[in-house]
Length: 187
Image 1 (tube, rainbow, N blue to C red):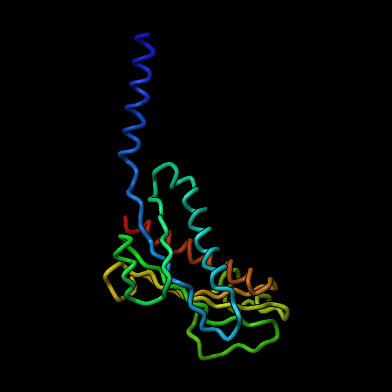
Image 2: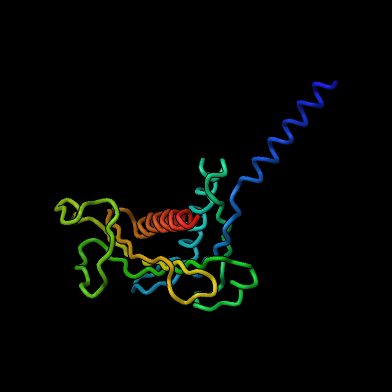
């Protein structure tokens, strides 16, 4: 009986010690997805894909073992820079995303948009611009709560014969991964 009590006490002590070493969760408010493209996009579905990617990241080995902080997402009902819900939900960071363009295959590219990071191919790769490829460009801004300047931002472009919704969904995955990496850096 004493051995069992000692073993249970040791197990309880180990669990408590591991819980003390885990980083605090990060509260991330995710604003309503903005669509600046001239294409019809289901922004609610795309934001749900972004949230699901954060949920998958929270199930990753680093997060479950306590090496990286968990990201608790809070959905905002607007995409304004100053939303009172950020304060009400005690968010530390705010993520704003914007679909800049969605082009179907065969549509010429607009040259007025900023240079972006292209996912999945090397720059100037002739195979990257297939005639059947659809293109999508998404920008994101990660901001600290209470600050108006972006803490991190980027523009991502993907080309693939996938349907537009799937192509944008892949970009949402990339946004989530980049935001996670940036939040992990701050630790």
